Amino acid sequence: MENDILFNHHQPEEFEKLSLQIFHKQYAEIPVYRSFVDALNISVRHVNQLNDIPFMPIEFFKDYKVLAEKDNAELVFKSSGTTGMQRSQHFVKSAKVYEESFIKGFEYFYGPISDYIFLALLPSYLENGDSSLVYMADHLIKLSKHQDSGFYLNDYSKIIEKLNQLKTSNKKVMLLGVSYALLDLVEMQNFNFPDLTIMETGGMKGRRKEMVREELHELIGKGFGVSKIHSEYGMTELLSQAYSKGDGIFNCPPWMKIMIRDVNDPLSLLEDGKSGAINIIDLANINSVSFLATKDLGKITGPNEFQILGRFDNSDVRGCNLLIA
Image (cartoon, rainbow, N blue to C red):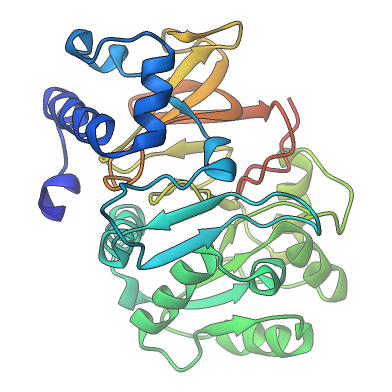
């Protein structure tokens, strides 16, 4: 299947047709997904519409290699985690598919990458290694082709100096940061940088007490002098990201879709506006599994728009692991 078909701006009928094609491909090629579907006693001949497709629990990425037996992985991403914690692994057949997904996804919401200077404050992800987020940030930094774009591990004095210097830049400046590091930064110095875009990409990682989103974003917003805090919703098991430009409302790119399932009946889907557990269709996962049941709780708030309300456990989710139901 051609990549440009995956990343088209799909109408609902086209999205459903493509999803069904991918379902049948993945059922045939991915052993763990086929075993999961068979265990549910679902006949693939009866999977004829979007609501019929079974969503595989995301935890399978911890225990199984979710990849066709004939395929080799160009990349292997691992979830972040504390020592001794079992980490999810995503075996990615094509680096090009992932790169196309995050480049087109970012530009769909934010415009040309070359318009931005990217400052990445992602110490915990850099320390863990094998992070899909670090891979994405590294490519955004390189594609910006700006000498001021770069990573900052724990050198807060350097990033403070850089932020103060860039206040007068004629380019847009985006700071991608894990939550605890952003709080550390504003505790060292208050900024007045209303044109700065802050992209919060994760939670406390055990470094600080967890906080509700509203409290966290208020503290960060005041510290930087910005009115809205942006967030990224992504995870190791996905090759696409949803973005929030404030107020905790996320939007999906056209090749990604959120569906809500009943927490007491995992095979039943709920209508828009009802709260439940989040299922994700990510067409960019063409070579693994595109239909995933997460541990997140949420609701659909509009066309291709959703809100995170909390989650079942402490699984690693970028941008949302600070949320409390």
